[in-house]
Image 1: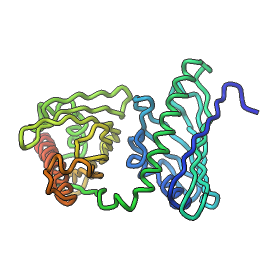
Image 2 (image 1 turned 90 degrees about the horizontal axis):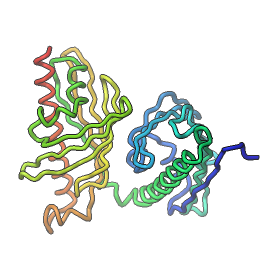
Image 3 (image 1 turned 90 degrees about the vertical axis):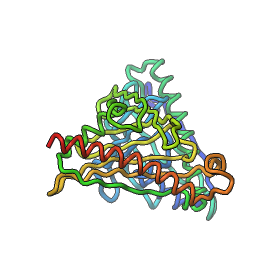
Length: 314
């Protein structure tokens, strides 16, 4: 019997991939920002072979939220159950199950079950949750289908790289420089304007206009999750034309010489726009080099300005 005020819903999708491969993709939460559009960042709090606590930062109805969930992994039956430990209003409680079913050797069905209650069982709150769960579930399942089915086709289109600068200063001063993005238009020559919003401490929305070498200005929007004073993870949600995905993180690791400050990027190229942006003769390799150079140039500029800032304070 359903509890009073408890809503139970189910979404499903068919995927042209073996069930075991689909299960592995869902089980590996560290890749979720690349797979699921609403997910900004996921961190393991605790983990053993069958159970884990994870902290998730994601958007719901366009609003950034974060929560901690417990998950139980059942690889034999291709099931993963989850339950939010402390939900974010207007959600009072939420949990559910991922179920992967084999339809054939190459086809599977994914069922995503949710159960939830609204704060004070308020109808307006329940309507908000209904819409968020429906939108996110459809988005997650569609993205899961796309990413599994295109995994091999896009293997050479997704790549990661990292730039590191050694700084003779403290991790806190370098972290502060990157964290204080609202000052970047004053501190960084390639940033024209910047808008930073942080309604929830540690969860930022960053929109900025950056200047390219040719003088053109590009607007990007990202969500950032901050971990003072050692890491800032981000996901770009308004992307340049040559990318369908851009996630990354800044890290600040103290060592005997000061701090190693790094900027890591993971990118998926948008092949539909290569000819329009780079010309009809441009290849995937050309686009890869162009994107890497552009991102590295901006990252290294930011790190070198952070170096000057931190070393001046040391």
